[in-house]
Length: 376
Image (cartoon, rainbow, N blue to C red; front, side, top):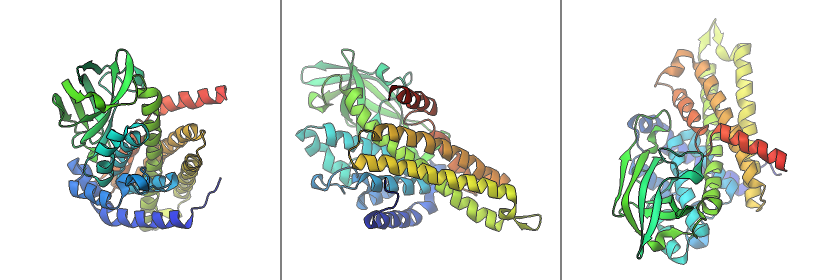
């Protein structure tokens, strides 16, 4: 495994960091308070080519390697987890169209997803269904040349504004994937506000009341929804969240370096106290370890190694749990200031908890990773 970046990857990282520092970091707390990301910011992401990272150049995207895509997720996560979550679900939808879509799907959706003309999102979770994805209750039945969908989807990231959803429903007892457009008859959304973290991610509940879509909007065959399409999209999402967790950890580390260097107690900067140094050492080590696991998963993706799926599970598990511990320590090091909106570590703490839940909870990951060890 290579642990150093290529010249091109290092250059991309520097460009990503500069963009985040200029366009996102100064406004991230505002996005959190207002529980929204302005359309102008999303268009800036599109102009930089960030919405087309997983799409090859010949299809209009940037054709980035997966390590570079991961680095982008880290930098966006360092600045604002809500914006990173947009990249996650948008990339999941674009990747599904790229990998599983027909020529018609690609001509209708792919270039517009890359350009940011339309925003994509992922619709699997429901009010009664989370980790047990095969038990989705939303139904679809073919009536003439259209599918009619009924059900609810909940906790949809950027569901308030997304234009097309990679959505999963039961067709004759088989979980099947569809591309559902916002302007479809019988489709509506209800905003979800007041959440713990990633408050700018504009969550929504999707309501499908005899929602009609063209039969051509089915993606893949009947029953391919989870076994193929959902699994591949979720792997992209899990990889994005793993790197985003590294970004949160890095943001905490940088905030604590600054704070412990300037905050004085007992006549010296608090960085000179042994217990503070112990906490900082753990933060540094775990951030680097999480990043190395993400690099490993990315290198395996780029080389076409099937082990990348489990390595991504492991990277996401370690990075998300490490980010939560690091964020908790960052708040502790800031003391009462860490609980104030004047300091971003309270936002990092809230966002880090979300990382332990989305794209497979910590407990589900523990079950799957352990099972893998016994099987292989």
